[in-house]
Amino acid sequence: MLVQNFPFFSIVLAMFSGILSSVLNGKQARNVSLGVIGSTIIMSAAVFFWCLGNGESYTYMMGHFPAPWGNEIRAGVLEGLTALLFSVIMLLSVLGGMRHTFEDVEPSKVNLFFIMIDLMLSSLLALIYTNDLFTAYVFVEINTIAGCGLIMIRQKGRSFSAAIRYMIMSQLGSGLFLIGLTLLYDVTGHLLMSPAKETVASIEAAGRYEIPMLVILAVISVGLAIKSGLYPFHSWIPYTYGYATPTASAILSGLVSKGYIFLLMKIFYRVLGQENVIASRMVNVLFLFGLAGMIMGSVHAILEEDTRRMIAYSSVAQIGYIYMGIGLGTESGMVAAVFHMFTHSATKALLFISAVGLYEVSGEKKDFRSLRGAGYRNRLAGVGFTVGALSMVGFPMLSGFISKLLFATSALQSPHKMMLTLIGLAVSTVLNAIYFLRLVITLYGRAEQVAVKGKQRCSFVFGGAIVCFILLNLFLGLMSQPVVRAITEGLEMFD
Image 1 (cartoon, rainbow, N blue to C red):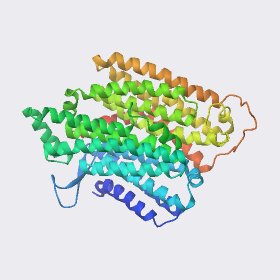
Image 2: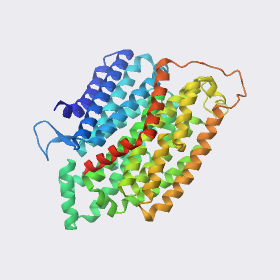
Image 3: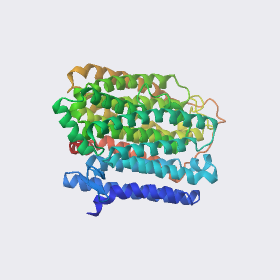
Image 4: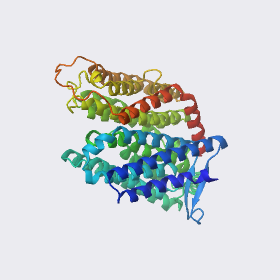
């Protein structure tokens, strides 16, 4: 059927649009990117509902060469849902930061910005859909290059230094990931995920290569943990997210790290085998680092006066939540991790885009004192930031509440980790409330300097993006049951 070609079409279309944008001006490149992202939303929705209706995943063989030599794409319920959500968030992020993109980027380089957006979209889709490990590595590198381009496109000193930090840490993670793939290929002789998993199963059954397999698991896990910003490999995050354009910050914080986490989940399930990962105790290591990230990321956020860096450190804490869920080593823990991956993607993009509207009416200052009363000066941005902040804290009706509820209930199924998980959730929630509610209260406090007024009205595009982000957050919070069922069904298809 035609719908089975959509994953391939969406990846190639995004890559081709990047090539096309190189000969277009800024506005033309913007229109092409928006059209491609819109098309990807439609195709991803079609893949998701087709797989949901059929109750099974499928593979798409690229070219005429079958396994183990050929290249494959694999699509299921979880892949379709993730691609759909990522595409929607990318579209809203581009629209929400549109005006600032044209203000912050030199006119002659605006088309380069949208080339990076196109490449980022294609790489994220490839990480979601690919069934080939080396293809995954290629798009990991494309993702890294596109991310660096998005960071340094402002051509300011801090953006250059942030891009260098990002590149150094990303290349370290990529190098470890490549070493792991090389060792895996040496042991199994396969790069396609399904044949590799069969070989890994036979190796485990025969009791061979125990040490090499443990090394492979450790190197791949650490490599992707570095690239996704798991504590203590997080030092690049405050600089990267804090000094990029609003659209770039929203995409990098909301989507890029999640693409690497999704790839790690695929490798656990469809290459190494989730039962082997649990038996190796690697999940315990991820669990402890996740708990550390939940606490330390929040502590760093509390100590920040620059709200951009505060929001960035919050990402360190939220990534810790995801790894803690993976580290529980249970199906319910993995469901909670995936749901929180969706929650954080939507909410963090909302926070970064909303913050821009607050900075505009505060003399472009980012400290707490300057933002006092900004919620009145830009009401829609204030509401958007408040919704995002309350979601991160875990208020009912919002997506963050469902995430923390899922983590708490999944902890009950893991007796040895139950107390640590519940204590970590409680402490982290209190810390989240301290810095997020402090900022929300500041936004609606009486301004000390009435002279700081700024613009009073939001543009239609910016306002529409904020409203859509709020509705997406409410949807994940109020309609969580169908989403959780889809995630559960999708994880079952991973095997």
